[in-house]
Length: 183
Image (cartoon, rainbow, N blue to C red; front, side):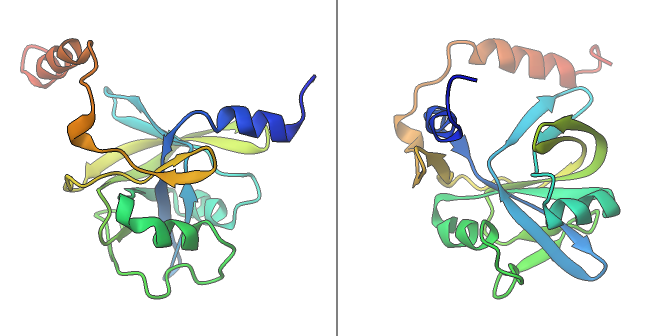
């Protein structure tokens, strides 16, 4: 390796990510952590992935329960992100939430949520790569997302975005996937 971890982190910080809170319950207690390493993986079957650190107490609870919810944060949820990214012992103190269909905490004010069960877990260096099977989706709020870029919170103005040139192909795929002819 010809670079140090700080250089590696700075380089990867050039890639803007959304911020999520991954949650579950440990017995009766809600647990969760702030997570940037979340991604859609597959439409059929519906799969997502996230990457917790191997020493994460929240991951331990998720592994034990076998289920989790991913809460997509809005730009107005910076305080929530900071709380769940800290070592605060009770990250849910003062945070309003309700249980998902599978029982995982859904944070009030999230832009969207994805309710999942753990499908597979793979080694990923100092993290695990967790693949989750999506069981249900929450309502989508049309607010601005909370983003992380170059070590800082950021946002994006939806009215100033430019549609991706391949969007029409994706829409055609999704339409075909939902039609009877696809099945």
